[in-house]
View 1: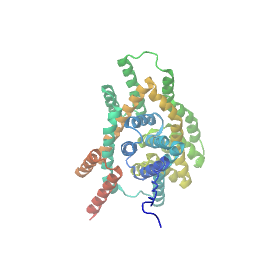
View 2: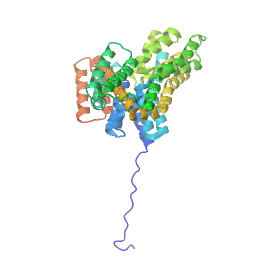
View 3: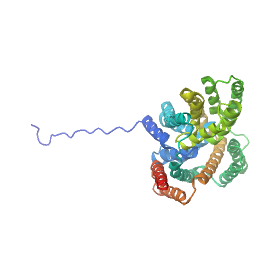
View 4: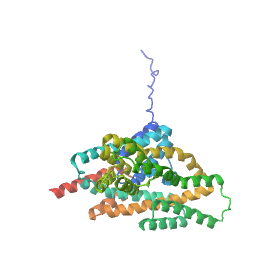
Length: 410
């Protein structure tokens, strides 16, 4: 029998928090299933999760990472996911973030490709995306609203951003706009502030390395491209790997840029696809969640079955993992060196302008009538005022699209 007052209170062991790697796994797996709308929407959703909700990094750091991923070839939003995973959980986080973000989209696209090859057409899902697309427009607008405060530093940045935006709608090459805007910003900043002529050499060398990366890689793979063009007609898995590896190293930014390369290489030169097959492949990449570059999965299945689909997916995304691993030390020098830090500010302003251009184009496509305008406006106000998780807004938009289809059908 215990003496009164001697009872011991049972010790309650607190539940340990999720490890950084587990956080990376669950976040990017969910984004892989729900990140609709292309790179601009993906970036907006990542910003909401890692800056506003989880506080992994600041808005300023996030904008810098956007700038760095825009400096290198490959799918920018996927590279940003890989970079965020690396910063949060090291090398394991780099791999886990990339695989979790790419994997769900790849599986969905693979299933659609099987249906396409088997039945000869794509399922009609426009009714679903009638409600999703306005929400995506609101998510991107909300991200631009917040990121602008970190990326636009003064009147010069505003002027550069407006100039890049005008060039975007005039059809100027995105690569030229990005680097041209950064160079112009740096030059004008130099003149305005009257910096001394001796800029830090280490930063200058790092900048030259980045600006010439695309040219060097493209030159390296010209021989591969020429070799493929003269190969025999049957498509081997090795040729599929080399072709999509080349695309992963030389294509910048978005599915729209990828479309031009795919048309030249696969339709005109190699004759692996017809024009209609290419358009169907790009359409699948646009209306499925996750990276638009999973278009490669669809194309691979069409030209060579599931093995070619997996190899094409591996090849086009492999450069993103390699380049992020290589770019991180250079990225730190870019921000810490005075000269290259100014150029990175220019890249950030130009990248935000390009994101705005994409927003305007998506808005023209998504905001078709009064209801879609209302959906976008309400979603934007909810994000701005209440900070809801964008996943719930996307699901609500999909439900509205489903109800509209049911009512019209009835």
